[in-house]
Amino acid sequence: MEDIKFNHTLPIQLRFNDVDALGHVNNTVYFSFYDLGKTNYFEAVRHVKIDKHNVDVVIASIKADFLLPVFPKENIAVQTAVTEIGNKSFKLFQQVVNTDTKEVKCICTTVMVGFDFQTGMSKVISDEWKHAICEYEGRDDLIRSHHS
Amino acid sequence: MEDIKFNHTLPIQLRFNDVDALGHVNNTVYFSFYDLGKTNYFEAVRHVKIDKHNVDVVIASIKADFLLPVFPKENIAVQTAVTEIGNKSFKLFQQVVNTDTKEVKCICTTVMVGFDFQTGMSKVISDEWKHAICEYEGRDDLIRSHHS
Amino acid sequence: MEDIKFNHTLPIQLRFNDVDALGHVNNTVYFSFYDLGKTNYFEAVRHVKIDKHNVDVVIASIKADFLLPVFPKENIAVQTAVTEIGNKSFKLFQQVVNTDTKEVKCICTTVMVGFDFQTGMSKVISDEWKHAICEYEGRDDLIRSHHS
Amino acid sequence: MEDIKFNHTLPIQLRFNDVDALGHVNNTVYFSFYDLGKTNYFEAVRHVKIDKHNVDVVIASIKADFLLPVFPKENIAVQTAVTEIGNKSFKLFQQVVNTDTKEVKCICTTVMVGFDFQTGMSKVISDEWKHAICEYEGRDDLIRSHHS
Image (cartoon, rainbow over all chains, first blue to last red; front, side, top):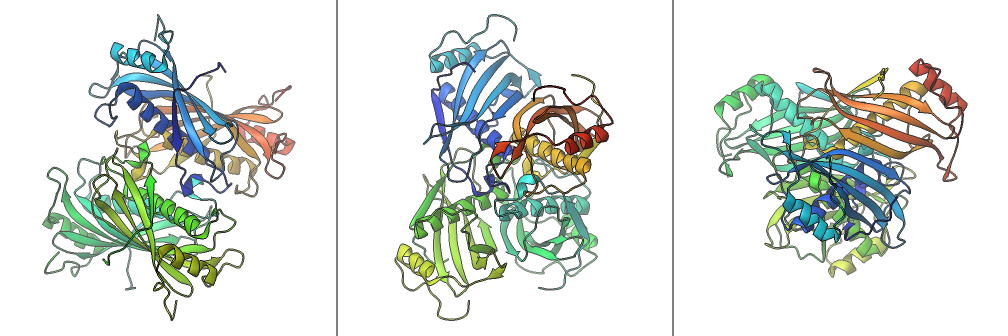
């Protein structure tokens, strides 16, 4: 994995029933953490509240690698960064970490694509959004020159 | 408890993470079962699919009594009946049962009130709906004469 | 409702999929908030971490009254107090509030009973626990003299 | 994608709060479907009920591609097949399909690794399990000869 610097870290409040019969946080629940991290990241980048009326991206694919279990009462956070921006899509890298031990519990790569909920069609990522991300990440090498 | 005859029984498909760290179905998950039973009951009574566009009732209160735990791999169902209809509200009685042993695991009473999502105001339960419920239940003693 | 003074308030982190198709927090999700409030309350009262190995109470019944919807991005908290202690049970009163407007969104009464997970039998609430609750609440009138 | 023949199809019962504020099944919920499909598949292959006492694999990684949204009231199923078996791991291929239209909504690849919950160490996939899978799939080309 390339060495990612995260500018966005969101502490996660675990719930009692996040933990399954095996005694650790259920694999399906991590995706709620990534969702939460993602939404908060977009709000931090774009300075707007995200709700159903202004969502303009959808998840195309998610890949998660489960490295270590999360047990009840661990203090965890989800960290989020955009690592690449294309014409109609961008790539997020996220990880769930124990904030005390710094252990990385799970890493996740998500591809999101621009989507117009009115027309049901994909759409380009706006320049405004691209620049907001680059500014937030402090990187000008995120935008891919060609194909989405 | 009065002796209720149920005309509506919906088998429930348990999910792996319905079960919490204590090894039985988490108390919060029963309310998903009651929700599912309720929605299916309304569809059976009114012969329409319920979606966000035609919801015209909201939950005012729910009371559940947990009698026995549900363990993974039990075959369970949720049973639903309306037991009383007022002017602006009606009362549902539901139970979660093991369909093999007939054990009653949990009973639940819910008060639902008519609600207009356009105006955000309560509204009366329509005569059409009242009659559909009475017909479905095969009872003509459900409708309260006075106050909601 | 009697006028309850809450010594325990836990801010809740909403998740994206707490909100259902109707655009507000789904009724079933409130019970996760109450669970979380309860667990944190017990830990504050008893100065121990609660996990599956030291749980010694189960939920006998829950009654929730839904007063106002919770919308995404509201800042909410769950407040918890014990209002009555019997021999083998005690009663919790909880509410979900908007921490900005102080609006009460939902109130909830829960009866919990002492339970021995080894034997599967009910058991008395220990004097140690009773006193810890009274001390936490700063009240000496919580303990009922008779029947559980 | 290679052309997979599925011997295992499990209809999924959608719940009301599987659907998020955007009006379609939330991305995190698909992973519950895959979990359910997986557990049922293992039970069909091994002729045992899976519970917390006999789990001997854990998820190492999951990759899901979201092709089409699932709307409330669609009839869906999850299909599961093992496509490759290594020394200490195997690969599952799953998809969520609309059983009426046959549309493929989402595809998912999962790597599971043998795990001993007593020791907390990885372990080999037993020959018994390998053969049960090959028999169930009717294929003798699943087992990789070398490294896990």
